[in-house]
Length: 386
Image 1 (tube, helix red, strand yellow):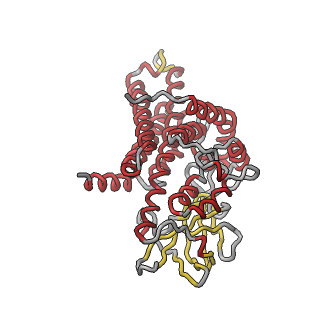
Image 2: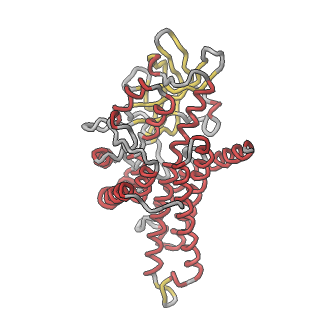
Image 3: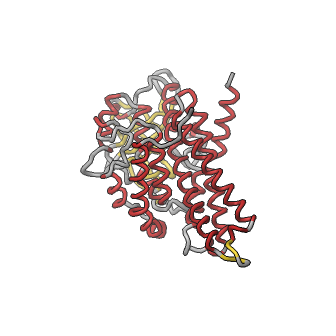
């Protein structure tokens, strides 16, 4: 029988994360949404608690957590506090996963401890997307050319979380390998002051406004050959590593969507119990009651899909991660939209947080692979099933 009760360790991280969300995140969520600035002091507090390096090995400065559900539980609570601030706190999990999935042990030993520095917060970025290469990354224009002991990179990247301010940037670029094929390979820039690397502009966004998102440019940037993540020995292995990176981080995104949806549900439920119309609380009206029942049921279903993806083995990780990402993203958008509807005019104004949560929710249908891409992934897996 499957036991869904939280273990003592899982319960502990849930309580720590929820306490942090209540006392550190929620009181400032509106401020960072309005100012659209990176919440460094909040991220530093989370870093001191170990929330930024939960799953990294202890030998690299992390907390050494191996239970795959614990980071999902943590992220749900942090995103319940604020999806944007959660994204800022957990932003280095993606570049770290790139290093784990695509780098050899020597490179992991070299770069991961930078994130694990307990005295000073260091953050990372993954630069994959371009203006003409979003869902179709094969149309990427950024290119790396090997010249002696260096690769020279030229191109630009769009919509990059922590772009230009990160201590470590993982840059994906096309390169011709020894096998004669073009591959998309990752390169590590561990010095943001390197010549030719620049922040073009910081994006102004609809939601998750506590995150820093920017366009960056590379003009003849010289990167040592040892900074090419090199677990793969061929173009196929590089591509497999890229897929592993995305498959392993999509459940984290799904957990954040669940936390955001839960916040909107709980707020609208409380409102519906206390808002009196036609001489009774509006929760007694079937139209509102049915909305709330659908919201809570779908949130629980999204959480179960997310946990299933977190627990999946490598053979099923891609399929289950895409299912979780697709469903949780759709539910986050649906639940936050319904929360605004339940509050009516009150939901549309900034006096209540549901309009912010609705704006935050939209990104989940877009980043880490759009909902349409998740559907393509799922049908591809289904077609290949025997």
